[in-house]
Amino acid sequence: MNFESMLRAIVENCDGGIAAALMQSDGIPVAEVTIDPVSLTEEVATAGAEFGRILDELRKASDAVGGGAVVETTVHLARMALVFRVVDEDLFLVVALAPDGNLGKARYLIRKQLLALRQLL
Image (cartoon, rainbow, N blue to C red):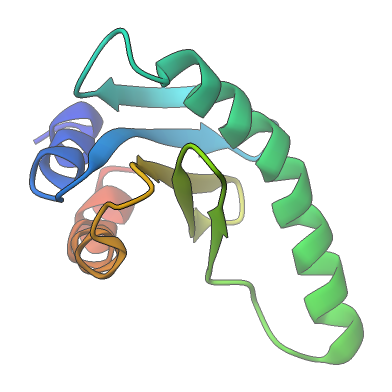
């Protein structure tokens, strides 16, 4: 199984799944998958890069308050919801859902694929 097939399993099995990307902490995508090529794919890659910087700031804030490592965060926007999950120090996963998508199932599917993703690294 490769990165793309793991990302596809998340997006296709989640109601409202739009796209998923495995991103380096500098915002460069390692792998990307989208259900609908004309949907928000370019915006999802851009959002992953832009919000990746925010994820770095969350890490700094967490260290400052002694909260431990950032594991996951969700951002709800008018046109989509984004779930960010840290894979390791240099990689994170971002999954985009329609505003009415099943966030709980997306989070479950991400956790389900996380170990396999880490084993491929």
